[in-house]
Length: 405
Image (cartoon, rainbow, N blue to C red; front, side, top):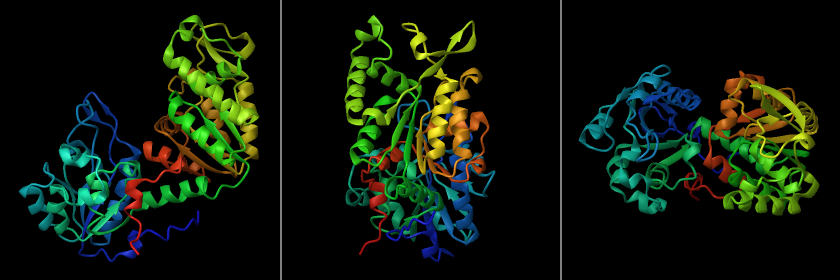
């Protein structure tokens, strides 16, 4: 990927030896019964942290976990232990108080310090401009102790939060290695599209996928959109291939989604492909049936073999593939076949592919496909920022990092 990022400073543009680097990481992870789970994000961020440490920088990690009021809103003590598997560091349960500031001042070259969850600070998540956040107590207290700000957390780049936009407003700033890879891949998928361009869209969150479909169809750069999962079922309803139940017809939310799907069909017409067969459950086992054989209110758990074959043939012909969302209930072994077939098609394709969405990357792991098996693919670790970029919306955390001329 040789997409230029000329408007950004990278780690290569700084002499970091002996400098205090504020490093915005994304180590936000799934929490199960109060226990933070190891995530790929932690390992990937650790690589950049280790590089900075090896270059004798004094690294101060700014990171978050969860949201206020939710069960996954935790301090970063467990994250410190997970990070220590990859890089030597010290953790302090303070963010901008005397203990944190003293620890930052005492850092030696190559040492790494993880501060506590930045979202413990009420002013962190206020939606403010970079200039406003730069005047916050958080930034005012810490920025004078640092020399360089590096953001490697693309996944929070769509948020105008203090740790994302406040520091680069008053410090020399650049992007980390993970951010570099994300931006290069997204630019290739959005601004330097090679055709045929195929979108493979599944999952259960139809609203955010609707936005992507409308946007890419209006731009006229997508060749085909292959639908699967709950989204594919919704478009089967929209096409009249299957009939909604009486219960669904009384469901306002469902009918609103159906109306929007019909409008998108008018916009995309034959560019939008739907499953021709599906997998259902019968006697506790997988059974594949044609769409015509589907009974009212019968649940669909995966695309069928015929659909998977048709979709993989389209993927083979593509030069660019953007995939978001699994094809079915991949967590259940009997119903992960469709998702696996599509991902395997990407692994054997010469097309550049961009894989995004938490469930899609989780499916890769569940199915057992290593990223090395996808030589022409980029697996995005971001959610909301990934979607916003596909919609070509400005991301405040990216805009503030551009070089000031």
